[in-house]
View 1 (tube, one colour):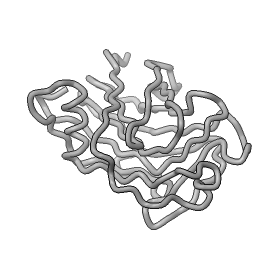
View 2: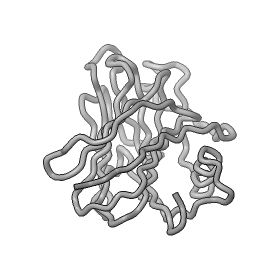
View 3: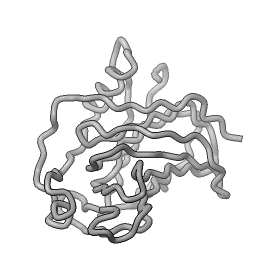
View 4: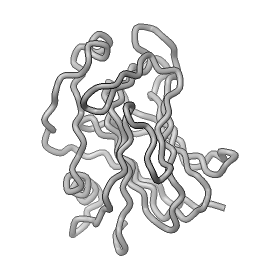
Length: 199
């Protein structure tokens, strides 16, 4: 049985990242849409430090990056989309969108996490939306529902900290808009694990 313990949403405001222009498809649905660049390992650690009031930066391992262009990683992590309005490859890793132009409702995405013994997982998804993001965590081959909640996007990043994961079963994090018709653009997700002695 998987014990997730306390699940903490981390959404902190850092200095505005350099933003490029999003695709025409995304801007047609949301004129103010901007590309959301990846955080460096140090930026992600700083976000966690500020949100949790840590005295020092947590040690994060090298991230596994998933994008619409490259949705599968060698460790078994993967990204999948349900009811997308578009999924398009770009030089920056690709973009996907839900609920654009009145096409579909209840669009969402799943981030499949590779099993890993006793590590804390940091999920950082780069998105663009006017509203919050709802999440639910499923474990095991049968997809047993676990923790769930809702959190905001800050600077285009949705950060989710999943502490104390110890399982040989796959874990899936489902992310969808807070309201069924809310428009969401997706640029990708990065998965990090913390070192010993850190959250």
